[in-house]
Length: 218
Ligand code: CDP
Ligand code: CDP
Image (cartoon, rainbow, N blue to C red; front, side, top):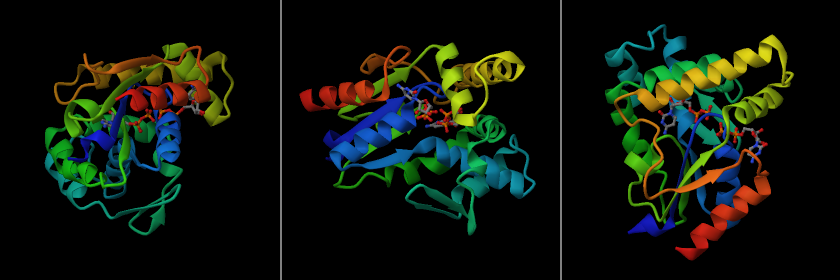
């Protein structure tokens, strides 16, 4: 049973999941699974193939045979480097749309579990602890206030933390979180057995240390 080597990190958009999860994975020598990337890749692939994001049959077919390769920080889709293309908020919204389709989630389920090997795994997303790895040794609900998360996203985009563009980023983040929390399948929830990590006033190093401490105590 490899579950003692699994850390599941879930939380809302731009809470720092990817940053913290990949640093924790590096510290432990575990693999890192960015599950959101799979939904983003599915949304981008559908867009390229002119399949509507709400076409469950069409999108599921694509999700079942995503031609993707992860190579370090680079993600390839059908031979094309899409590392940056999948990070736009438009594709984030598309990811959130295709993520509401039960058959699409089903199509991506085994693929996510296959990332777990003897080496161990840190996975981040929305349902790592609830659906994909319900027996994970450690579950973390990583969050921060919407204002702080929007500021972090704005900085990532090289955009100011005030004004119309910022209000738009904040509104987009809140709309996507709301959709992820309210959907019937695999909604974003803070599980009773998850540790709560609010990083509104916490730096990356401290957050990473906290997760490593919790894991060490398991
Ligand atoms: O994966 P997720 O969307 O949850 O967030 P991320 O892309 O890992 O983090 C969003 C941004 O917030 C990154 O630029 C991080 O460096 C930053 N961050 C931060 O400033 N303080 C933290 N405690 C965590 C992340
Ligand atoms: O980086 P950010 O936190 O904004 O998003 P992400 O983790 O890349 O996920 C993009 C979208 O995919 C989310 O808004 C969710 O709707 C969906 N997703 C999901 O449903 N389940 C997961 N395990 C991961 C992502």
